[in-house]
Image (cartoon, rainbow over all chains, first blue to last red):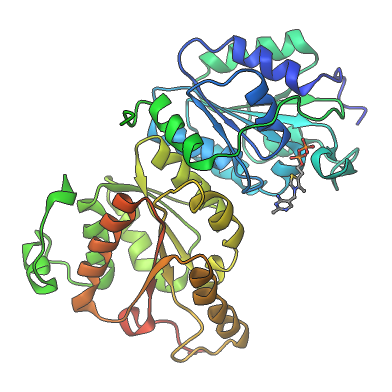
Length: 198
Length: 191
Ligand SMILES: Cc1ncc(C[n+]2csc(CCOP(=O)(O)OP(=O)(O)O)c2C)c(N)n1
């Protein structure tokens, strides 16, 4: 859309930039497919959670973590196609106003992982305008990589939920998460200090 | 912790209760509290209204509407992993939207998802579609071998809810507690 004066970035690159900024055991939820593949590829951390299904639930899962641990910053990485499946959660989050939640949307305009078909929103809907219209006033497009990093810095200090959308290219994720759901969940709980290993 | 409590019989369990509220919704609220379940997202149903109202009125609970039931499942799953217990309230038709999230999140990740389902579609249903949706519920639960109980009697309610919550948590497995019209009165054609 011409209203987005934004650079086309790369999912793995912006994910790596996010991870490099996390110094306080922040939780990160990776959505189905490429968002969690690139989270994995950016280097496993005990505070990462990788979704292997449940398309569209990265933000709700992150909201749950944020409500359980209000003193920890929580980030969620979601694809544009996935977000379209669960737009109502933007209003839920806007209503609850968690202080510690940052949502990141990777907008390539396509369902990359299933064969790069355009989403129904591609070229017509503005996801940041949808988020703002859902009540998430602190929603922005990242103009370029520096702006993305600046928006992450702001989110780390914010006193309400933030949403950052990055326009990205059509590349697939660069890694493949080990598909071991029990271990993923258990290690995440260790990483959040909820449990000790046996 | 609440898990250590022993109940020898449903009758004794009720007499141990501090609250004098013996409505079905009062018993569910107290049992949630006793089991430290404080996060209760829901998509409403007429029958659930008194429970939803009393949850909102009690500051122990964080309770709110979500746009979809699977969103609520995502929220309580995240909260569980973060160390906070939750439960989801829904209608039968809401349960019918959950097969994907049960099979791809709650079951494979071993999350003790606690679901309360207000049962529409039986014992006086007046909407054909509701009665058909209802028939999909138990086959879906059974296809994933999920624990589920249909609660019809007030004197069994606390025992079933309390034991099921404890079993879900200790076995790290979902449970569906189906609130039958025999318990709640259900919804009947009145206009
Ligand atoms: C409910 C549901 N419908 C469809 C699919 C198949 N599917 C898996 S990933 C995906 C596309 C995800 O698109 P997006 O979130 O934009 O990420 P991208 O692949 O572009 O990185 C689809 C359609 C699914 N897993 N679940």
